[in-house]
Length: 258
Image (cartoon, rainbow, N blue to C red):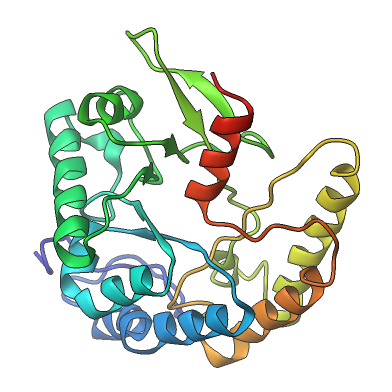
């Protein structure tokens, strides 16, 4: 067991040839770059442009790096529940998944004083929405990738609905690791093209665009330039709102109540 995991991560700056039999200190240090450098570089960039964002954060990560967790909230950003550990929630029993939710909420409250109102565990189970409703206090869930605007979905076995603020798998910097994006120019161009399409469509119907970032990826010096260029580009466009997910959820719930 490595920090409670069955094995080391295999997806990082180096080519993966399968999990090694022992600890991979190289990959571990790649992930550590996020907490030592990357998250701070991104936070400072957001400050420069006056942008408030949503951080998907695991409870265990907040406990391991409380300084970053506290600073994220102090700077006006949102923390969205990402489970207690980064794992596949569909592999958990309902009790295990609920315990993960409770542990994440508790860690976030104790470290930052903020109670998350959003949830994104990346790989949910068929029980996730029901458990979020059972635990209570959640305004939205983002474990869906199927639309460009928020919408409501029925919570199983209840008469209630959950607001979905969809996420995206394509406008995401982890594609640097799959070589879909090689340079910051590639990522910037894809963000710009996505924005231009949605901005044009938004003249008829409002649209929402997601950009997925990781401190260990876009926090690198050669990649952060893509975000600088993108912020410069979109802030010159009329009617663009750079918002936290909870702000989008509250706006939607107010304008389009279920």
